[in-house]
Length: 139
Image 1: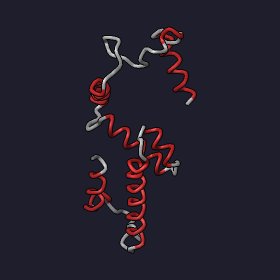
Image 2 (image 1 turned 180 degrees about the vertical axis):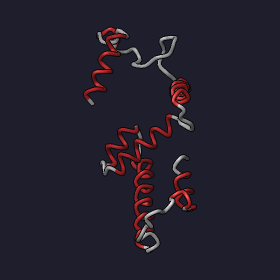
Image 3 (image 1 turned 90 degrees about the vertical axis):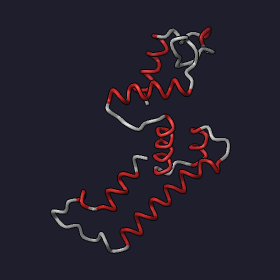
C-alpha cells in the first residue's frame, strides 16, 4: 500500500487537491471538473483496457473479482460488506456461497478418482470439461 499512498499523494499535489479548501472537490473528476459518473468510470476503464488488449471488462467485474479474492482469502464478510458498500450482509454472502461451492466442486472432483494420476505428456487443452470450466471464468 505504500506505493499506492505515494501515488495518491503525488496526484493530490499535482491536482492541487491537498489543501483544505479543496476537501469537498471530487478526488477523480471529468473534463468539466465534476465527479466521475458510473458511465465516466466505465469509459475510462474501457479506454485503457482496449489499449492493453483486455476484453470484456467492467467496473462491476472488478468489484466482483475483488470480492471473490477477499472471500477466498477468508477475510471477514463484514469487512467485505463494508468495502463493497453493501448495506445488507445477505448481498455479500453471495460471494461466500460461490466460494464454498467452488471449493466443494473441486474437492468432489478430486475425490471422484478421475484425476488421481495425470499422464506425463497429457495435453490439458484436450480436456473438454476443463476447457469449458476455464471459458466460464471469463463471464
